[in-house]
Image (cartoon, rainbow, N blue to C red; front, side):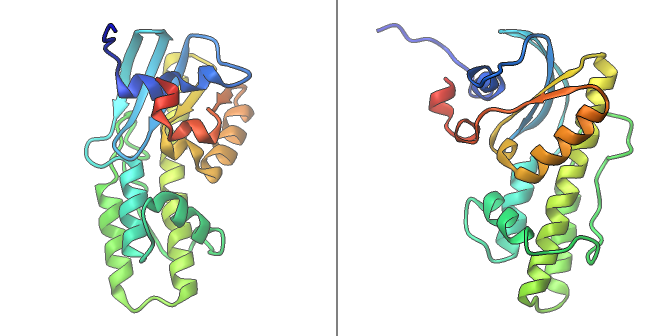
Length: 202
C-alpha cells in the first residue's frame, strides 16, 4: 500500500470543501485550533500563502488554559463556552492582544496571564466564573474577527473559510458571519463534527 504524505493542517484547511455549499478558490482561511492560529491565502489545493500567525499561544490553547483556571474539564474550549452562556461581559477587563497592531499576527499569552490574575484576585463565586468565562470568550473572538476581516481587506478577497477546532465556537460563527456579511463577504465553516475529526478531513 503506498504511503501518501499529508499535512495535519492541510486537512483542517480544506475541510470546508466537504460541506455544502463548498467555497470556491481563492479564499482567506482562518485556521484556529488548540495548537495553531494562522491566516492563509488559499489559491487552490497546495497553493498556500501564510499571512499571519500567533507569536506565542494559539487561540485554542488560550481557551483550554483559561478553562483550567476556572476549574473546568478538558477539552476546555467547549466547557468554557457553555459556562459563558450564563455570564455577562464587561465585569472583567481583559486585553485584546495586538488587535490594533495593523499586522496579521496574533498573541494570546498576555490574555492567558490576565485571566490567571483575575481568577486569583479573589475566590470566585459561580456567577464570577461565568462572567469571567464570557469575557475570555469575547476577547478571543473579537481578536479573531478583527484579524480575519483585516486579512480579507488586505488580500482583496471576499471569501473566508474558518477551520480547526475553535471553528466550532458558536459565538465566533455568529459574530464573524454577521460582521463579514455586512462587508459583502461570505464565511464558510465545516460541519462541527469536521472541526475536530482530522481523520475524516484527511
